[in-house]
Image 1: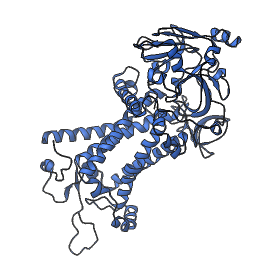
Image 2 (image 1 turned 30 degrees about the vertical axis):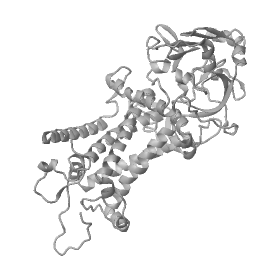
Image 3 (image 1 turned 120 degrees about the vertical axis):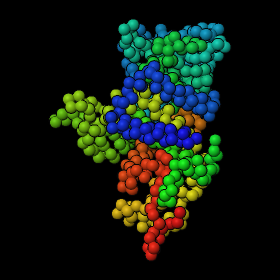
Image 4 (image 1 turned 45 degrees about the horizontal axis):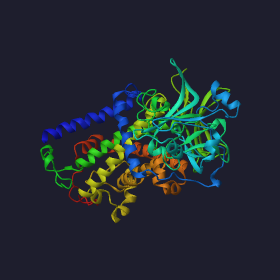
Length: 263
Length: 293
C-alpha cells in the first residue's frame, strides 16, 4: 500500500508537471493526436456513445422538442450550408417548379415509393414552431410544415432489419478526386419515427424557399441542424452506414462531427 | 480498500515526520478529484474557446438575432485603412484587440479567428474535434463532482471545512485585510475568503456551467423544457456559459497567485500528498486570536 502511495504521488506530480508543460508549449501539443481515426481521438469519441445512450434513456422515444408561439417568429429562417445548389439536375427541377421532382423511398422496404410533391402534401401534415440550433452555436425560431416521416415509412412498410434512414440530397457540398460529393446523412429509426420528425415543404406559412432546402428537407427537432438535410430526393432504409462515404453516417460526420447531435 | 469515511490518516502515517506542525489536511478523494478537475477544466476551456470560435458572438434571448440586434458580445475582424484589425465588442462598445482576439497569428500569416490559436484545442480551426474533446471532459468533470460530493459528505470534508459558520462572517473583515497585506495564516481550516471561493466554484459556478451546458443540448431541451425558460432562452444560456467560463478563469488566476503568495511548496504538497505545514503555535504571551485546529 505504501508503495502504491508513493507511485501515485509521483504520478500526480508528473501529471501536474506535464499539464504545466503543455500549457507552456502551446496548444498544438495535441494536434497530431486529434485527427479522425487517431487513437486518442477515437478514445475520446467513446463519450459520444455515452451521451447518446444517456439522452435516449432520459428523453425516450417521444419526448417533444420545445415548441414556440407565432410571437417568437421574429425573422426569416437563417439559411446555412449550401443555399443555392449549382447542380444541373437541381436547376432543371427548379426551372420546372419541381413538377418532375419525386421523392423515392427505397432500400429495406416492402413497397418502394416514388412520391410527387402533391402526393406528399395530400398526406396528413404537421405544423410546428421550433428552434433550429446550429452546431456553430446560433439558434433561429421558425414555423415548419410537412409530412410526418413516420407516415411515409408506414406506407413503404419498413423491413425489420432496417436500422437507419439515409437521406440523399441533390446539392453538391464538396468535391473529391472521385467526383462531386452530394450531401447525405443518416438518423436512427427512433428519430425517424419521432412525432416531430417531418419532411418539411413549408416554412413560416409559405412554400419552402430554395435557400432553406426546396422542395423538401427533413426536420429532426431533437438534434442539431447538420442532421437535417435539405434538397431531398431519396430516402433509403439501411441496416448499416459502414459502407457509405467515409462510414461515419453522413457528410459532416465523415469530416469529424459526431453522428449523434443531440448535444 | 479503505472506506471513504476514514477520518485518521493511518495509511500515510509512514510519510509523516515527527514534526507536530505537519498535519494531514486533504483526503485522497479531495486530492484525486482536484487534479481530475484541473485536467478537465484545462481541456474544456481550450476546446470551449474553439467551439466559441465557430460563432464568436453571444446573444440574449431564445434565438440569435440576424434581422434584429440582441448581440451582447462579439469578436471579429474588419478591414480598415490601417489594414485588417481584430476587434472585441462588449454591449456595443468596440475595442481594438488585434493580435489576440479577432485577428491573430504569426506575423504576416494572421487569420480571422475569435480566440487565438495558442488558446484553442486543436490549434487549427476544427469544431467537430473540439466538441469531441469538450464532451468527453464534460463527463469526467460532472462524474468527478458527484464522486467528490458523496466522498465529502461521508468523510465530513463538507461540514468540517466548507460549510459557512457564524464566526466566518465575523472574521471576514480581518481576512480581507490579511489577504490584502499578503499575510497568510497556515491552519487546518480554510479562511472565510477561501471558503467563499471554493464553495462558490463548487456549488455555484460548476453547477451553473453544467446546467447552461445541458440547456444548449436540443435533446435535453425535450427532457427539461423549463430549463431554458428559467435561464431566459438557449442563447442566454450560451452567454451565461461563457460568462461563467470568464469567472472560472478569474478564479484560476487568483488561485495561482494565492498559492504563490502563501508558499507554493507547502500548498502543492498538501494537494498532492495531503500533508500541510501549519504555523507554529503562538509564542507565550501572544494572544492573537487564532481558530483552534
